Length: 134
Image (cartoon, rainbow, N blue to C red):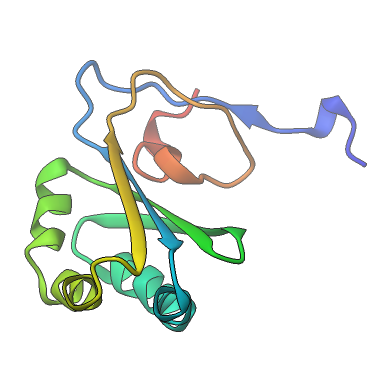
């Protein structure tokens, strides 16, 4: 285990009004069709999101056998909205339109108010503001 002397911690200096946003997208399977769709498509959703213009990092997590969450970091809210208008998002929503009761979906968008804490390589918001590390 590393001692405190060798553990590299830092923060980032955010601009007063950062453009970057964090998007949290959750999936809750409500029936068998939703369960299979979620597990069949989760890695594709992560990959398609990561390839989108303006997305700099995607983290996906499993909350339980019937729930997953995807957190993505975007250069701007405009870039995120462009993704919503794109083909990948349309494909993601096709299942929901055909099976409106199979998935519980939730999403939230946040703007950073202050820096988080980071160690070693940049993750999350630090990938957008790595040059502002203190």
